[in-house]
Amino acid sequence: MSLEDRAKAVAKNVEGKIQEVVGDITGNPNDKAEGQAKQAESQVRHTAENIKDEVKKTLD
Image 1 (cartoon, one colour):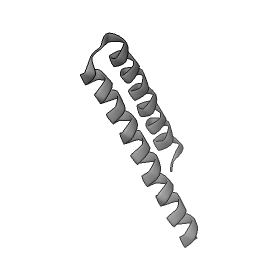
Image 2: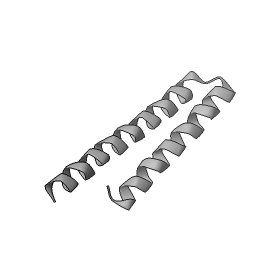
Image 3: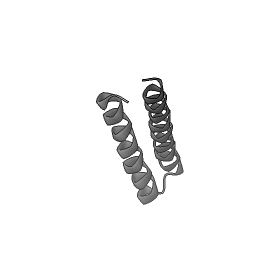
């Protein structure tokens, strides 16, 4: 996974956590759910890129 892709995934995760907390504080379930969805998306990106890295290592 490129450093840029990792940074984007981490940023998406942080953004999601902040949005989830804001939704929790304000009582807005939509913000909370969107924040959780962003965190899940970040995790999927990390997993996909880690798999790519492992496949590349295997092929090299």
